Amino acid sequence: VLGTDIIGALEEAFEYGKYGKVDTIILLTDGAPYTMVKGDKPNRSRDPVRSDPKVILDAVAKLNSKKKRITIHTIALGANCKADFLKELAQANGGTFRQVDAGSGEEPRE
Image (cartoon, rainbow, N blue to C red; front, side, top):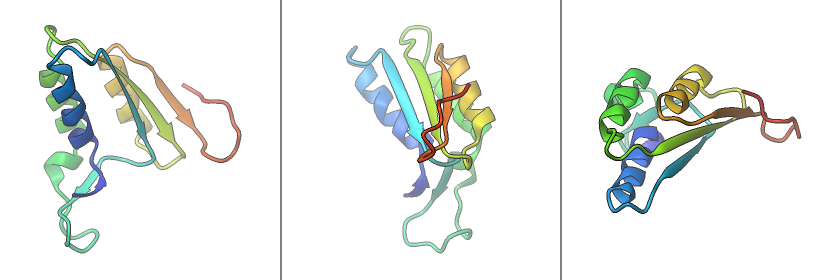
């Protein structure tokens, strides 16, 4: 898989959470959710399911049932992130969102 596989990273983190070892996830990303199948040419084989913010939000809601309730904080590096999606992901899971302009020395903003 190539790209920013946000749902893949979160699924793996939740795997650790099922053993009671995870109570908080910090998702640091420099891009929007975008997943391609390895070996395919860019912009040709984008996986619409794994790249769709709504699908990701729904999947995380199922993974993060009230029984587990893992807090998810999101940090976006640079201006190319889907800030609205990352903010919603954090808020829906009891976390906070910050966006940092990488390399500028600028303070994080909500």
